[in-house]
Image (cartoon, rainbow, N blue to C red):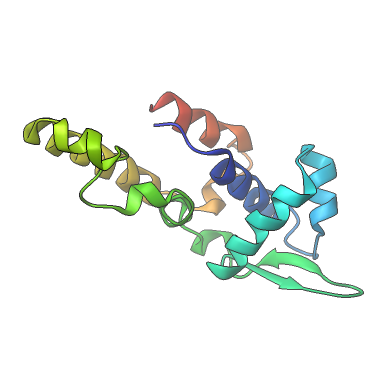
Length: 147
């Protein structure tokens, strides 16, 4: 399972905000620190705000912050909201043309594997990543290795 860049950036924004929980930060700060396009981050933050993971405030003294504690931000929920193709119960990431050609048993196995993947991610929160003994890059590496 390979996550989209949009999901990776969403996780990075949440991690950054979790590491800076005592203050609002700007998209510009995140863009500079992670060397990510500011325009792309604006779309990511807009989605995170719509999904109520982030609160944004415009104007002087504005910025973004987590909408709730890191312990209340479930990684499975974040990934489920950014990887829209994972939400379809009938198609585990295949186009409808491909899914129609796949044997029904194989399709069932793939759905079970996808569900196990999401279940495992749902066992973890943003706080788990932010703990001192966990490197922030470990989760991203773990999800890429699970592929």
